[in-house]
Figure 1 (cartoon, rainbow, N blue to C red):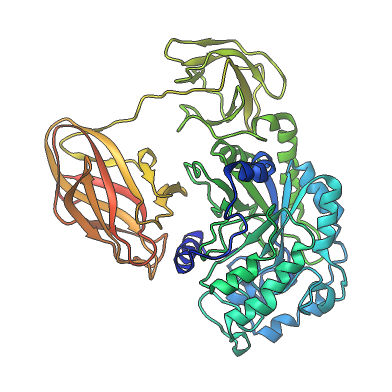
Figure 2 (cartoon, rainbow, N blue to C red):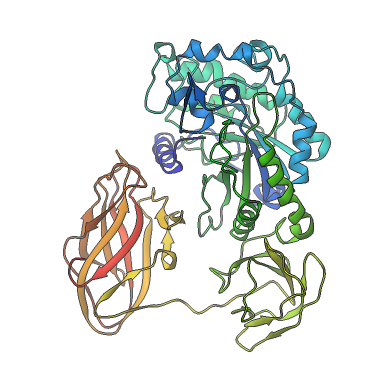
Amino acid sequence: MGVSMKRALIILALAGAALASAQDPHLNETTKERDARMKWWREARFGMFIHWGLYAEPAGTWEGKRYPGIGEWLMHDAKIPVDTYAALAPKFNPVKFDADRWVAIAKAAGMKYIVMTAKHHDGFAMFHSADPYNIFDATPFKRDPIAEMSAACRKAGIRFGVYYSQAQDWHHAGGGAYGGHWDPKQDGDVSKYVQTVAAPQIAELMKLKPAVLWFDTPVPMSKEDINALTKPLPKSLIFNNRLGNGVPGDTETPEQTIPATGFPGQDWETCMTINDTWGYKSYDFNFKSAESLTRNLIDIASKGGNYLLNVGPDATGIIPEGEVDRLAQMGVWLKKNGRSIYATSASPYKRLPFRGRATVKGNSLFVNVFEWPQQGLNLPGLQTPVKEVQVVATGQKLTFMQAKDGTVTIAAPTATDSISTAIELKLAAKPVVVVPETVLSFDAKGRVLPIEEATLTGGLQVEHTPPNIGYWTDASGSVSWKVTATEDFRGEVHLDYACDAGAGGSVVGIMLDGVDTGVWAKIPETGAWDSYKTIFLHESLRVPKGTHVIKLFVKSMPAGAVMNLRSFKIAAGHY
């Protein structure tokens, strides 16, 4: 992991444009076949990511200096020469590694699958490979952790997957390096690297029959190279969207963030660290709380996604105690409330009027309430008759009333859970929810159109806190709001936006009720995806009295992305 997901998506978009005809093992798969293949993954909802490699030995410190980046990127961030970094291998002897123990930790946490780094960007393989730069041949350990984890998972009834950095490799000649090479030994031909290192190693890993293959940092490759990577992949395999080059993969992969709207109609998985690093850093104790992690899982499940939560074992083979403790606490909650998470589908609500999330399973609507409202719990717009309401953990039956408009009022349980109180509404049929459409008022002073209320197309997502609209890598994407103006209005539009270096130059415009208004702007770079500036659009926007749809759309996108949008303001004059 490491490079921002936004940048990775741009690389992926460019790589995808290069080869629309690359080999995909699922190219001719029917919907029925895909549903059958993805069934276990969609039901799992919760998995363990394991970042473990040679980088655990320096643990974030090089030559007495603590590097602020993530642990597994130390070779890159400290610009360590190839041979100097490789000299760590004879010191790496993780004698406390116990595959059964790791799998037991995951199982106790309620996790249903594990994805472990078989080779990260430092090029060091954590399995016995024909390439000698691996843990069996290059260290005193003389064992194959990937094979041992595969066997342990199989024994415990947990699915096993592998992460493999297919193109970014800082050790082998020809491997890529974000920002460029720093050692002449890294120089070489990427095609030769793929054909002699990456493709053979993927073929080796496939002999273990993993359930998941997790690619990372896509770069443009030839059709022959992509086909060499995908040829060994069995049809049963699930793999993500980070191979690029015209191969979409099975899963979207938001990193360190939970998209506000999920990815409707797509399989997706948020990967996230428990502290601030993926690979082990000896001094990173900034662990998220068990409450926060559990609510993340609830949030992700409510949007139809999976939560791939990372642990970073140390150089001896031990998962840090702070991570184990939090996973154990999550497992306690899931043991009592997992029915509201596993094998569920996304919430029928865009948002709830209280702090909580909803999921669906058959004729049951599950609601996880983070804080029970003092004025009582009201669930609006549920058109399906409610037969019974109960607390998932205790089975306590709750008194409820359902109004003609569908609003369900539910009495508080005897006791609530400090993390989340899961309740189940047993319905007469699958839940149908009708909530009135939000129309924003718009007066003579104009207004700020809230990001969270926007209608998004083209894969755009609301991300981060404070929220912004990101993932704008499709020129067909748009952002729109339904507004009601109390009188005729003319005002200026300005955007608070961010645009990474190299991604500028897109031209955006505004439509009113589907008609181009002629209000537009060319989006300059701001230097980073989190470096925000304000831009005023050319011409003023006229909004007649009445109800309208205001849409921000793309006229041209020359660089693979548009911007991150944090605020859309319409006002009379400059601020």
